[in-house]
Image (cartoon, each protein chain N blue to C red):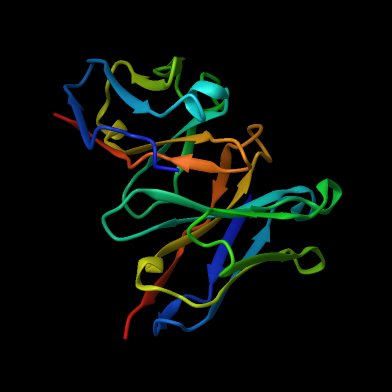
Length: 123
Length: 110
C-alpha cells in the first residue's frame, strides 16, 4: 500500500525556518516525481513545488510565491522527501501535503497524497 | 498565475446529475490536456477521480466523467449518491512547469 507520512509542522515566527519531511513507502520512491501542495485555512489547494526523479534530472520547480524561500530535496536511500522553508510569512500558514505526481495516472496528476502537516506562521 | 475558478458550491438530489466547472485560460486548461479532478471527504486525503481530462482510474465509478471545452473543464457526476457529498478540486498543468488548482467546490447531496 502506498503511504506518505508528513512530519515537521508546527508554530514558527515570521522570518523563521522550518523543515518538513515526508516518509514514503509502498512504491519505488526513487522513480517518483514528488510534489508539495498546501491549503491555507478556508482556501483552496495551492501547488508549492515538485522534484523530479533522479533519472529525470532530479531538478526542482517552485511556484512563484515560494521561489527563493523554499527548497525541495529528496533522499532516495531513505525514501524521504523534504521541504525546507525559510523566511516564512504569515501567508505560508497552511496544511502542507506531500504527494506523488504522475507516478500512477500520467503527467501532472497528483496521484497519492499524504494526510498533511500544519504549519502556522505567527508571532 | 491565478488559481482556476470553480463555483464554491453545487448540489443535487440522489439520482440526479450535477456538473462542476473549472475555468482557466488558454495558458493552462485550454493549452494542455492535463486536467485532473480530485474528491476529498472531510479528514481524508484527496483522491483522483479523473485525470488527463477524461480518464478514470480503476475503481472510480463510471458515474464520474470529465470533459473540456476551450478554457473550461467539467466534472459530471451522474446518478448522485449520498457518498458523493465531498469537496471537489480541479487541477491543470499551466506551462513553465507550473501546476494550478481550483478553489474547490463543495458538493451537497440533498
